[in-house]
Image 1 (spheres, one colour):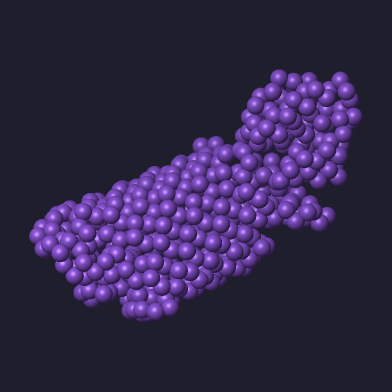
Image 2 (tube, rainbow, N blue to C red):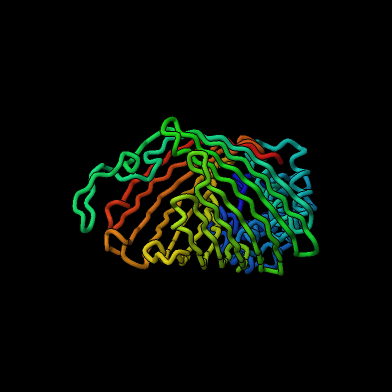
Length: 437
């Protein structure tokens, strides 16, 4: 995680502290930091070991070192500076951030908390709150943590039923046919209520059990038969060993449509997360799921086997961007031997998030999912092939640590070699979230 304080080097440092003879190296390091090239600033600073111990040099070298993945050296330099100038707020913020990067959560929390006592500017408070939330999340490895949230949203959905655009479609072996009204695109406004709770309990160093529960209900302004409800529960155990985190999770999900049970999913997932360095990591997962439908849809009952891989990288630059790439492959085997309902699924998603200003965050992603069915459709005598593409974006504003506002946009389409399964769906929503912390 890479969260920067605005104006991190904007606080004027009197060069007279170091004396004119020592100003040039510190100035050169500072200039590179201002340009956003902390790695070059660190490399340059390493060429002047004789400058270490000179306060102005320690400050800028410490900032560059923390930013470029050398937090240990940065903390030592910043500690020397803070000993000489304990009232310098900017230096203490940088030192606290260095402790955080090193995983010294207790020292980072103490430093951040002490800074809050002097009533710093609101933008600094917002950034400190984000660090404290991240520390709280990491504390789950050695103390019990829990959380509860509620969220309410309103929005507009251009295709609540995933229907085709027009009432007439051309089908293989049948030609032009008419689609029932329920299968044609319906657009509606909606309201949505979501709530959830989670808890993590450590059992021994590196080992913890966790659980969560969530509920989500979506109500449309008309055509209430398409209202949906989701209830989910999950629990498992995690093991942290140096740079590796292992998780095993059992989850249950129930989907209601028109206030009647439509589908249950029971799943077991194994995950591995490896931290390559302070800025990047990789992950892998294996999953088994049982899909249980009700009523006339029980012919769709299936077992799903999946594998996934991912990559995550944070960048040291303005807005603190974060890149994630995830890909996966799944096989859905139909329980009734209906190979025309079984499929191979290939998925890829690329997403970027950033923090352009204190309290603000933005993000977006592009996803592609390819479905290749295993046999020709029983009636159409054609093997179905789908390509689902989605483009999503979100903008969030943190009013405070508990309350946040978020706007979301989803643009999606499903292309198929069978026109009956083609559709376009766009959704826009505004949500208010409150977290009990």
